[in-house]
Length: 184
Length: 144
Image 1 (cartoon, rainbow over the protein chains, first blue to last red):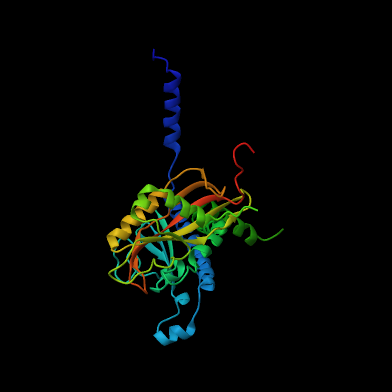
Image 2 (cartoon, rainbow over the protein chains, first blue to last red):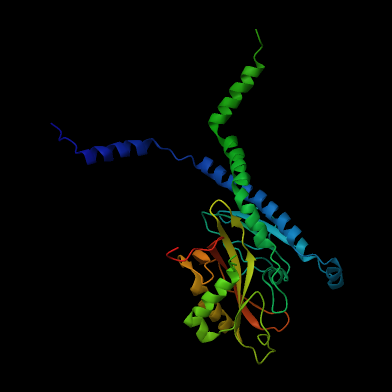
């Protein structure tokens, strides 16, 4: 006659049974993460637009120096698991000393968004110098957009995840079939 | 009406720290004072605390304020050391009340130091950002 299981053994056994039934849908996780990246890119575009509006503009000085205006040198990059998936920001993400680009370090399991200005004057405007007070434009733009993060990210995730779900595809196919069926 | 000066509170905290005071007592709000900026060969250490942004959160009557620390010194390593000393005053520090009755719930150094030199005097400096979670109303004194 088999020995009776203690309550702890029963709980462990139930947990093992349940765990065996859980299947990780890796494709859905990937799509959800890529959805986050899509949403962050949309957010980055909004931050950059706002920062460009706030940034001081001096077209005469820029023309005199023969360089683009600082406000127009904004750039964006979004990385997913170390791969750049959005934006044209230069620089290799794993390098800490990327030549000609920003120093962007991203982890293997991270989605990273970077918004910046490539002009060498940008940080001087943002934080000030000995002879000039700070005229912040990037951090205020970021702070204004942070409350709307969910508005950017949630729909983007929804788009990706819905597109990859077998269940959604099933219901969409059923809907299409019902619409195609001749009415009595 | 009590004026809650965030930059003033940050300056006061830096001035009260003996490690910072051992390096310099020239802690300036917003811009350097006369005599701080010197030419090459006679650089002196000083710190500028520049307010960057302080968006209000009306639902909690708080603000997450960002200030920039610009730490000037004679050399890059000295500027870096001054920045790290200043950053230690704020990094992961808990609730306290400034002398102006500004409630500071917590503070965190967001990054840095980044090294650069001033475009006018070429003096080396290290900079970084500090986030301060603060009250937007004066904190009443104990016993009120």
